[in-house]
Length: 207
Image 1 (cartoon, rainbow, N blue to C red):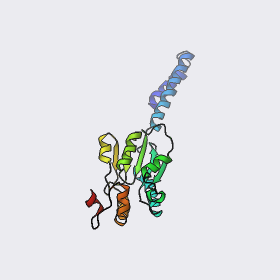
Image 2: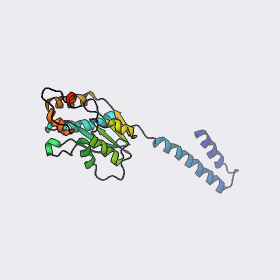
Image 3: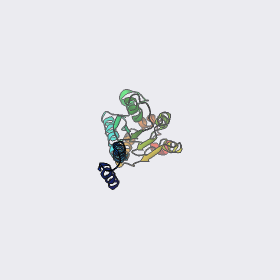
Image 4: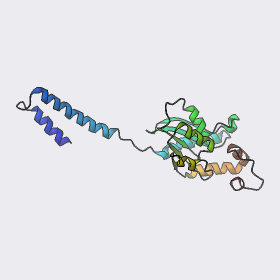
């Protein structure tokens, strides 16, 4: 491209060539072609670093745990990887069963014109409640820290065209598994299950 532009500029700089109006038109074309090439290069969309984005949600989960709550965190980013908002589960702290990690981040994001180009990042697979939020507002990408402790509605989200990426984070898995083992009743309450039977594991008895 640069060779062609050089030839164009050399040609139009020669006084014996085309009249002034024609030369100026060609110079404008050359400049526009160069600018267009630079723009297409600089405007190329980079894939966001999902692992780095998950760290924000993990920090929220740790905060929730330090407050005595369920360690699930979430964050919302745009396609450039810029943080819009973050939040964590506050069921225990605020005695409010509606404040899951995803809904807390969603509320803190404020009003958005559209959610199509926003990314929901969460330390745990979204439950049916939060999966409904993703569907209702049109998020097209959900990054999940893990789904081993609880698969939630990720297969349903995938079936309706939402891109769900499960990072299988060991830290996410361990932190929540430890909490569930120590607080099975609170955990079952959060996912809408009856209290676990004495002597049974939460997952085996209720799933």
